[in-house]
Image (cartoon, rainbow, N blue to C red):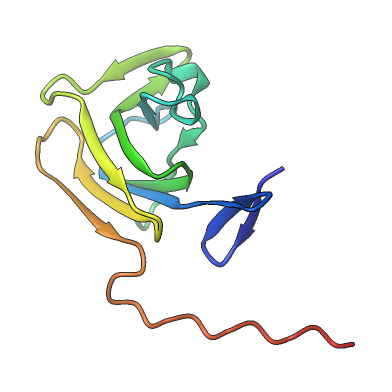
Length: 136
């Protein structure tokens, strides 16, 4: 069981940081965008097993976004467009990699374009106020 606490997930006493993605990707109705990569949460390079399915809506299209919790350290990945069990992999770039920090990381990219930015999730954001104590 994974519990979300203050932007990070915890499993027992170990905290797992958030990893958020925003990718500009043109698609057609019925297609979806996933993050597929080197660890189990991103499917171990199998698009059908990836838990990182991104989403979009009319206001934000063609930007797809989403994320989840991962361990800290280096993650290799690619963005993949999926539809009906078929996958369209990025071919214009080598495997991407991100170094996930304990505070979490946000990745911004464009499908099939090599440029990518990564920033800490709490970068430039005002600190969250502490939660009110529970009543006795």
